[in-house]
Length: 359
Image (tube, rainbow, N blue to C red; front, side, top):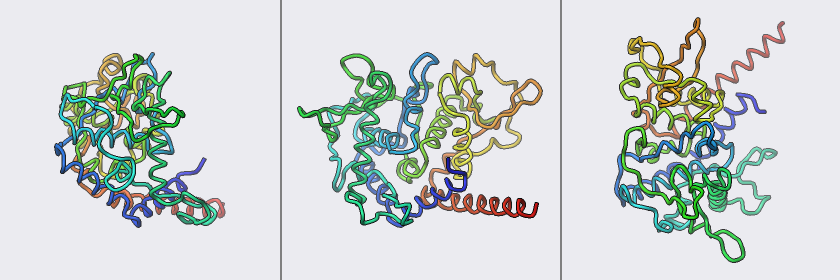
C-alpha cells in the first residue's frame, strides 16, 4: 500500500495535469452552459437514500460507489445535476436526455480526467499505446461508470442506471435511463428518476457551486461522501449544526452508512484543508449531554469523525459545513493545499530519516 507521501504526490500530479490541460475549467464551462440554458437551480436536491440504508439491508448506494478508480459516483451526481437543470420537481426521467455521449455538448464534456500516466516514463499520454487520447479515455470512463452504476446491490436492485442491450448483447450506452437514489428496486418496472420535492429529513440540498466551481471533479469519492453526509446532517439538524456542530457515533456509522472510520476521518481532514468544513467555533457548544445511542441511530442527526473517550463519555470533534467555501475555484484551492500537504509530508519523512540515521 502506498504511504501518505506517495498518495499526496499522486494527487498533486493529477491536479497539475488537470490544470495544464484546462480540463476542469472546460468541464465547468460545459456544466454552466447546461445550467444557464435550463432551470438554473440554486441547489441540487438529493434523497437521503443515497447515503444510508437499514442495518439488515444492502449497503447504501453511496458506499458501494466509494471505489479508488472510475468516475461512477461523479457521473451519477452529474446526471442528477443535468436532470434538475432540465426537469422540474415531480417530473420523471423519460428515456434518455438529449445529450450524446461524445462530441461537443456531450456527457463527455462534463467529465474532467487527467489522462493516462506512464509510470516508467514518468509522463502522461505516451505514444506507445493506442486509444490514449483524452477524448477516448473520457468516453471509456463513462462506459465504465455506466457498467458500475447498473450492477449495484444483489440482483442489481440498487442499480442507479439501466442500459438497454442490442440483440448482440452489447450495451446501448447513449440510451441509459437514470434511476432514483435508492436504486431500480426489485420489481419488473424500474424506479425511474424523478426530481424530488424538498422535504425535511427526506431530501437535502447541494449548492450548485459544488458542480459549477469544479468540486465534483477534484474531490475524491470518500471526500464527496463525507461532504454529502455533513450536508444532510447540517440541514436535518440546523439548530444543533449552528450551535455545536455535528458528529456521529461509530454504531450509527457502521450500521447505517457502512463507512470505514479511517477513510472517513481522512476525508474530513482534507475537507478542513479545502475550506469546505470547519471545526465548530469555540463557545458555540450548548453544553447538553449527547443524545442516546438509540436516538442517534434512529435519526442519524450527527456525524462521527475523530473521537476519543474521556471517562465514560465520548468527546467528538464537532464540525460545521461552510458553504461559502464552495465559491472558491476548486482546482486552485485543492492544488494549493495538496502542494502544502506534500511538502509537509516530505519534510517529515526527511526529518525522520535524519533522526534514524543519527540514532
